[in-house]
Length: 187
Length: 305
Image (cartoon, rainbow over all chains, first blue to last red; front, side, top):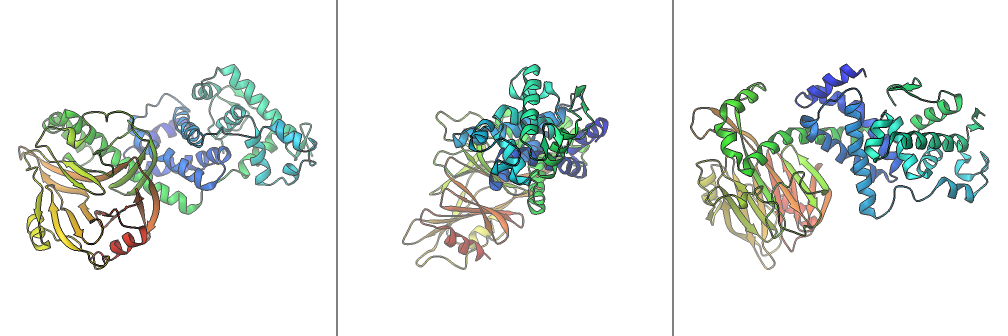
């Protein structure tokens, strides 16, 4: 969606049902994917996503457009806060298993680790969830939120260089363990 | 999934090698996605929440003591509202508290552990237990005497602000016919009740729409059925110079428990283990009792006619 188009849509969505619907349809899959990758059980994902969009709906009139990407940054900040609140209430962190721990469980070569044996949804989700929480956050906000490093930095309370570093390491981690690739090449 | 995966987002280079592209593709293909049913249900809830927010803001302003500004500042309000094709909007809110100390719309002031939207005008919030005093000025019962009504029941305290110039008295009668005469409408009554229960009294508070509290007495704790007309109706402004629309909504706030349940295909809430709440046909219903279980509450609710 072009920034100018999105700006008009966001402005109209506070009052216009059709604009609200288009905005909702555009962002629901992205927010759901972000939350889904970060939180396991589907019922938890649905509860969190519902809270995100209800807050979005309630806050639309207060939202202040500050340029391209600002709406996405605002929405994903809400999503980030809801996921963080979810884990806070559960008394646990977003990811209890590190990639390092995964590597210790089995052979680190692609295809040798049972978790990575099948390149299905479970495998990629396990890989993402096994990233250290900060790297997981950065890569998901970058990809599904389409956020700039500065916006991610603001959400996570980091500086931009740390975001860039975490993003780079997250991608390295994923590439290294993704069974479809080996050493950065397609198998 | 991301709008631009062209390798350059906002001046920040994305890796464009085949391995990363394959990874991104898989990330997107395998991304958890909402079901169609969930998408539609949430859309309706979000749309309702957006609409309610308009009312809610006005309610908070009104309850926070800016009522005069809201109503008497008719020029500004009217100008703003006319843009939407409506006249001045007055807001009345029935706020229900299912906790011993009466609560009202906590809005964003308190974190909601759970928030259910049961219809266009009905919400339930489960909040974290409060350690201190409630914020002042946002609750009908914190307003000056004569500007609100409350009804205390076994299952919570109910209250709402009254419209300017309106009587705040809650009338108590012993028959449905008397209640109908007071409110101009007859409450729905249950065809099914546990053995030994019968109508003891009906309380009828003031308001732009009929509200009834039916109390049924029997061998156990009272059974309370609360029926509230919700939504928008035409009303009169305090100085009768402008057409107004009065909007009524209900909200239950509890520190206890809230379960999301389905009741005859409608979203409903089972609150604190004793009260079933849902919205249907422009009305919000509460069926509660300290001795009720969910199946019994549903049976009573289903038998309302």
